[in-house]
Image (cartoon, rainbow, N blue to C red; front, side, top):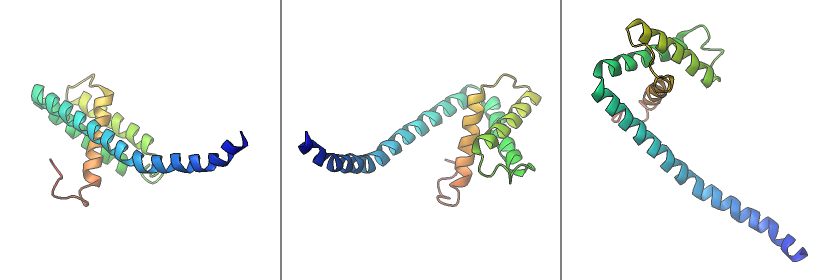
Length: 131
């Protein structure tokens, strides 16, 4: 049994190395599949109801900028979830005002997150923005 105790640090180092090497490509793959699924769902939604899709994009933009420009922007700098909640609520109010009541909250959140991702990556990959 004591002989196995000698191997424990080596086994731990081996497992850690495997995780360090394997986890990033796995996460990248999962992220890309999620992005593909969202893009397909968005395309299907846009095709089925272009007016609602337009207003959803507008709502996401308005909600995002409202969260950034509110007096809470500084306080919320590190509070992404609170910003997302603020943006989602603002977007929901906009959609209600233009006659699109009952839009799925997860759809609004996903659209806001996609909009933020696009804007944040604009400077890194300007040739891909808007695709």
